[in-house]
Length: 118
Image (cartoon, rainbow, N blue to C red; front, side):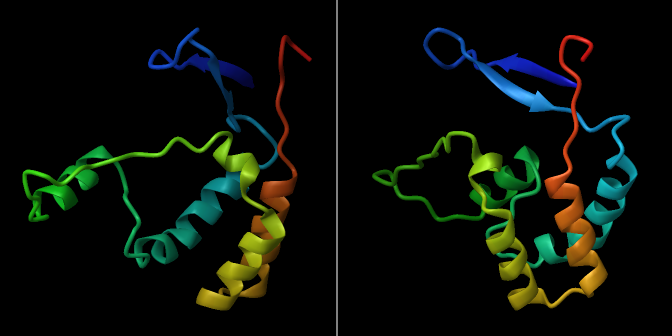
């Protein structure tokens, strides 16, 4: 399903589009791939699992009074990532089995959703 979540921190409260894969043809494949690719994600030093993990990381930093923490908002992050280049980067860095790359490509290029019952 396609639905929107309000961005309450933005002027005019625009919606953040969310495409849920629950019940979609690729749901089980996505779950399988998430398990297969998780070890690769965890090996990236800049990988942050969730808010609690981020807090753990920040607590270990020696921040000075004049240090400034910033965050960036990438507009439409998921759609900005070129799939072919991302798969090539994954292959070059981690060399996963070919079938994992093929299935990941299939999953990323076959997203289905329902909006207003259609």
